[in-house]
Image (cartoon, rainbow, N blue to C red; front, side):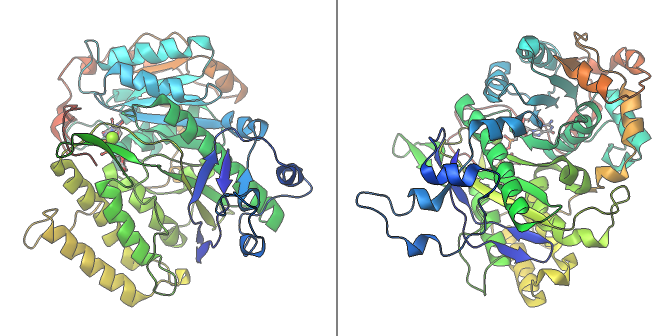
Length: 502
Ligand code: GDD
Ligand code: MG
């Protein structure tokens, strides 16, 4: 991957946000300069400043993208990270063929965890078929795990781990929501892929497998560059998160009868505009934040365990301010954990084509995203340098926007997100003990492990009581039996004919 060099990172106390880098070549050929920088002796810094302006581009050269203003990561470096990357794919009722396309795009070096909240078990697009599909995809040696969000054992595992707040009080199962699915994915990754150092997320409704390949490589490249930068500056410990924005989001326009390649989705546009006011430099608002809502993002496993997570669609915007709140809640299991978080923003070359959604969905996303910021801005550490007047004004304007645009009514407050505690404060040994030992070729019962996952387990030296056999026979899996399916976030009908997307 070759990227534009990001110039002008912005520090906010423990958080360092880098300006967006753009993918300019997917498979670069090393230039002389790359060869120099690639060696361990001379590492490319990510925070170079002023370098570009000193050098005049040659004739016919794009001044923005000449070799001096880019930085490249080559296949062996990418592969080294992809081997350690677990990709979590949260899904619901997407057609199995669409989910298969997403899995097909994930480099086979990466492990995959499919966390399903599909509303029905049987039929060609039921969760049993999703599980079977994943087993098929892992037949060539990929490591994979399937877990249904309503699997009773998963709820029991969180209870034993000391995270009862993730459970729906009525059903006793894990709550519905994308954030909850991702949280489960992180716990599964730590439990069953103990040697993997990175975790990434990719939505299941992506229609372009080729863009999925790019997301994974972009994650790996972002981590590689952050590592080079840390090595150069002597930083020992840094949490790194890579967030993706897309070249475009193709949408069908009924008025023109054409596909339009819009830059940002309707939800991202709003959340980014507020984050840009929050993280403006010297009061000058610009397009610095492009990934406020990034469903596609990845982070070091250590960071994923350390971060508190918000529910549903509040999860991604909350990640931007969570590092600024963290100092107040020390991590139990990582006393020496880093206090520095670096956010790397990457714009891909591929477009993002996914299921289109209607206005109601977007309004809910505005409410969730703004609510996640609104309710926590006042808790932001003063070390961030963010002024209290700015924070108060922003909150007022968020509330006003939500009211004027139907996200809240009358005297209503923006929704306050559920915040789940950091998983490094949870007892993940007990979590794993409840779910039991992974065994390949598992029957399709809502929890399954495929490929080489057994070896990872064996080498972690864990004793596992394999209690899952009793859980499998629970009657939860029959279609339409999930009591929680009607709460918070209803499974939505997939519609490709809707005219307006996010
Ligand atoms: N496991 C699980 N559980 N998955 C879920 C749930 C759930 O309760 N709810 C949604 N998902 C899955 C969907 O199946 C899909 O694969 C993915 O999460 C994203 O959900 P969408 O409903 O397609 O969201 P979106 O396209 O409107 O928004 C996406 O992009 C935004 C940025 O543009 C999401 O990734 C947002 O989180 C993101 O902010
Ligand atoms: Mg989508």
